[in-house]
Structures are given as C-alpha cells and as structure tokens.
Length: 404
Ligand SMILES: Cc1ncc(COP(=O)(O)O)c(C=O)c1O
Image (cartoon, rainbow, N blue to C red; front, side):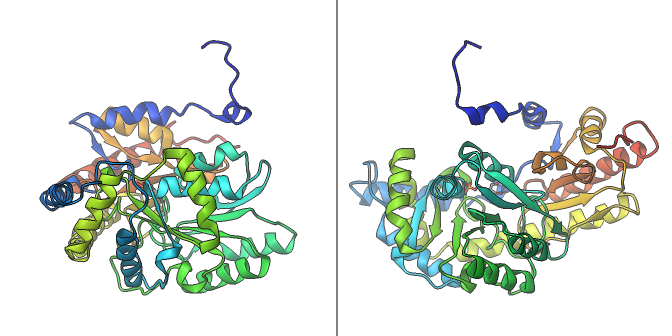
C-alpha cells in the first residue's frame, strides 16, 4: 500500500475473514446458507426478457440518461396499497436498490458523532452505509419473538438520547428472522413522533410473507417520521437494481441532489423494464408463487433443525423474509463452528459476529441461515451435516470458553 492518506472513517474498517471465506461459496461442492440470495430457479426470466425487449422496441429513450419515470412511481403507489400503505406519486423516490436508499438517507441525516439507533444484530449493509458518516451506533436487543426491544429504546430516549435516526427491518428482520410485534410497532412510531426522530423502515422482505399476520408496515402507522425503503430485489430480481423509498415530499429535492452525485439515474432500461413488467400485472402472482416456495423451504429447514440441533439451541420462526437465526447454547463460537463446517461437511453460513454492532459472547454463539437460495434437498442434507458439526463440537475446544 502506498502512503496515500485515506479519510478518517476508513481507519476503523477491519478486513473481514468472512469476506475471504465467502469466495468459497462458489464451489459446487459447498451447500451455502450464507447469503440473502433469492432462488435463481424462481426468477421469472422469460417474462423479464419479454419486458426488456418490449421496452427496447417501444421506448425510444430506454437507453438514454433519464429522469425517474412517473409511470413506474404510479405502479409503486398501487403496489404499496397491497402493503397497506397509502402514498402519493410525489412521495416516491426511485433508487438503485434499497442499499442506495440507506446510503442516501445516511448522508442526509447523520453528522459525525451523531447517535444512530440500531439493534445489537443489524444488517451489515446498513452498518457499511452509515460508516462514512462516522455515527455513534447505539444498540438495543432484539427479541426472537417480538423484534426490537422498544422499551429499551424508550428508556434511552427518557435518559436524553437524541438519535439522528433509527434503522430497523420490522418484517423478516435481517439477520434475526423475526417480525416486530404490533405493540412494538405502535410504540416505536409513537416514540418517533414524541421525540421527533426519523425511523428508516427497511421493508425489502415485507412482501415475502408466509403467514396471515396482518402486521402493518411502520409507514402505514406514521407518515412524517417513517422513511420507508422497498425493493424489487427480493420479489423480482436483484440484478435489476431497482428499489424505491416512500418519504415526505419535502425530502425529495435533497435526495435528488444526493442521488445525482452518487449515480445520476437509476438505470433507465431497468426502471422501464420493471414498469413494463408491472403493467402486465405479473408481479403479484409471481410474489404468491415465491411465498409458496419459500414457505416450503422455511418449513423444511425448521423441521430438520428441530431434529438435528442440540436440545438447548433456540431459533426464530420467521413469518417473512429469508433467514432463520439460531442461538446455540452458551460457550459456542460459531466462527470456529463455521471453519469446521466448511472443512468437514462443505457447509457455509454466516456467524453472528458478522452482524454484531458490538462484539459479545451472545453474538458469538449465533448463526444466520438463509433458506431461500437452496433446494429442499440441499436444505435437508445441509442442516443434517451442520447439526453433526454442532453436536460434535459441543464437548471440544471449538466450544470456546473464552470470556470477553
Ligand atoms: C435488510 C436488507 N436491506 C437491503 C438489502 C439490499 O437490497 P437491494 O438489493 O434492494 O439493494 C438487503 C439485501 O440483502 C437486505 O437484506
């Protein structure tokens, strides 16, 4: 490395051994439960191909730079109605995936040193997005049945905390696989109103719903203080890189300037092809098919976990999304379990440490398992093998006795 001086925030960046190991997930002999990938077998490839070619054939400007298309925004207003959210076209801001949405919002909301409310286990993409703003992350626990500990949030606010924003994934939490309970939702938005802080609601898994829980998005409970992020990545295809936000109209000019500096436009061809696809009325039936397939995979994984994990392990039972969060008994170190799972059984998952805002023994004994990307056969075979590693590790050195 040369003597080039990088910005101060880069000094805290640690190279992750997990990133190095992830290269291995491409090996054909590995069964990977690591990433939040949709199932490639379920991509509606021919419908997307048709939408692309129709778009190219009928829209002269589809390959030009182009402003956000109003017709796609109108389609999204309709789609949001199916999530129970009422909004207007003027409140929709198109993004290059939800990941860009959180980058833009972080830049608009967070000054260096500002407290940002998150959970002990937080989507690593949000941690990365906010890191250049040099925030002070303030974390509360997540309950595996009811989600974010909103009482802990209230206590912090009563003690004087003034967060620049609060980030959460209320439906199908990544990584914990839980959906926030109704009482917690109502209380969190009431707190945002009372203490006047914005909530970034990451709802990329909201449409992937496996039970009729009728839990409303936070945005449907509060319009001014909830900044909603949605995405076509998990419900159509992540390669399109099209997402959206629903925000108060007053924020749109600031977002537009920040986005222009970031990537000028969301890819015109992708935007317009998504719009063509939506106009054909194909998305909702496709989402219904995805939910059926992912529900089956979730149930298969839960059943094998039940039979092959230690009796004192616990895990979330997700109503939404793509992940099951497993808490092994005290003393386990899932980074060490992962090394052995790869070497001995060809299994990959992400250890809790990858999401921990602050390292702890509790984070070290957890792992996140994705159930959307593998076939039913791979899920059954893979969890049996993983269970073997976990059980074998129990009485050995891998079951660390370190304390921090
Ligand atoms: C919680 C969460 N938010 C956002 C994203 C990124 O979504 P997008 O592909 O729309 O940028 C992911 C991707 O895994 C995610 O899990």
